[in-house]
Image (cartoon, rainbow, N blue to C red; front, top):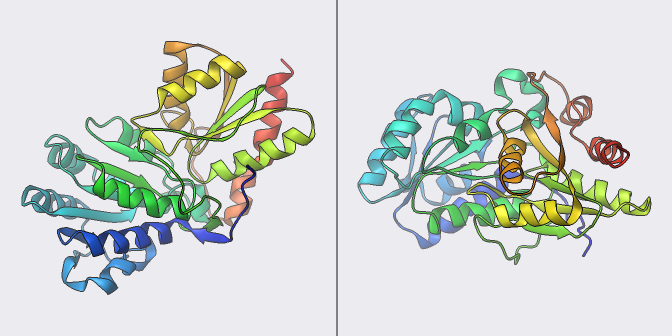
Length: 316
């Protein structure tokens, strides 16, 4: 099937809609905000269930401690702020209070990637996947559009027992997956089959990977597209199968190439079936202030960049 954009929609809205939907079913679900409620989509929950929403001010480290306390008391706490704060400002508290105790705390890392745009390097979360995936007991989710973000937020609340990090963005991006889609945490999705090369993507770059594959098909290149919405635990089977059947892999992520999603895929490949690989992502640099689409183009995170990498790889 060919995926079509239903209309641009911020993934943060999907996160908020998922919280509000889950709140209807789970009376023990609570949300913790840090002065940026609407910026991360938590207003959908706070407006519907004000008695279960707690604004703790700009005190992210304290919020994680509060979340751990709520979890120990039998609640399901969701804490969200910008990814640069959610994953890095509170790493110690997440590691010791949440992961060490294997508590079911859902952490929403908003404004992820360079597409935050004008907020600049300090607010562009480009290291959060690397930080979160190394923590024991942590599940790391990176949905590809708003619809999937909504569904995966609900799944993070209902299907996971321990800590969960959900990564999502601010800008409106193509919303192309079906609300009735079948997905399972820990299982990748084959979006387009192909035999010449595999493009394995996560988050916002999955749409770019699909567009690249459609263009390559017109040029006689058969590209397989796989969406990995669960970075940890990662779906080794779908990755190894792609390596065996296509013999070449390019990963795509809106994140540093060092230690991130591409590294996670490479770890699977090198252990099981080594093949030629290349990586789309930030190449060991900080971002800058600018329009999201201009930054994505400048730092090589577009369909055109994927096409260029594929052609170069297949010409070797």
